[in-house]
Length: 453
Image (cartoon, rainbow, N blue to C red; front, side, top):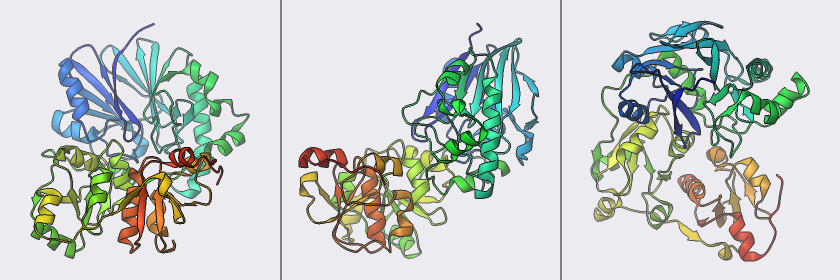
């Protein structure tokens, strides 16, 4: 069987994979790359490649596509569905259209479902199919969600997804499956799944391909849909119109204390990206806690207001470029700067600070317990009697929650501190954050966790 020199470019935070394919003549194809092109460009430079083609399987909702940026800065030819009606230069492809990559060929396969204009791309060496880039259609042991367009389109798209998966299942068993969405994606990839597979393996293991009929498939797919960040509803249109081309790498400007205070008075918000213990020890009143880690972009997009200017507070060791790129790749171009000198500068200027108490599992007594994990996590085991509100929807419920001593918890503490910061901004007081999660509580108390919702 033919082999292809392919480099997966994994975004652990968003749970996605892009792919760079060495075409063997100094050129490369990339598939589903985000606007944060650092890994793509590094991989291409390391191999001495020019990115000649950039294919997008669909109008992405969870990140800003990097295809237009590559087209504008490197002359890359963009390949995408004609049904997407993109408003920038690209080659619009229809079902069964082929593109000669120079030795290899790329065949477009219409696979609607995740989106109405979704294409999978079958990579062929001569007439031999080697692998298929399935985007948000066939995933490893799953299929991507169909509810990102509108509620009334969810079921019709799920029925199209059924047909699309069966079309892909008709490819030869040895064909490699290269999905975009993987473990950690809010587009419905199951946790812990491998990121690639084969058609034969998926026919044997993917429960959605085992569905008895179309109705059973639709019930299984739509019944497993969890929540997702609001920015998912905006980015597809950004990607259709064409993201703005960056002239320089994003970087937050340094702001002194006086300027930060002035911006806050005008309605700006602070996003504090420091580690949980540092935020707990002291932070600017009203600051939103989103620790800088791989999933930073998702929670920024879920919790921060895209219409308000954002000011970053970070630790000395944290990379401002990483913060800026994570925001940029989800379309958050409203970071106006960072507090120069961090919290040391703020306290040196004798400005007010707020602290949030950290507690251990054995310190939970008569307080309310608020669990902010996702529904499946909560159902798998939680402290008996705890209240459950997902962090992503907490802003909408903050006013209705009791203003009583409350311990906020998640799995490790990062989301719980984010939740506490949301509640503090809404006027809640006497909050504390659990260091750890429900398993720590069960171990310390010797009591069983409660299951279900």
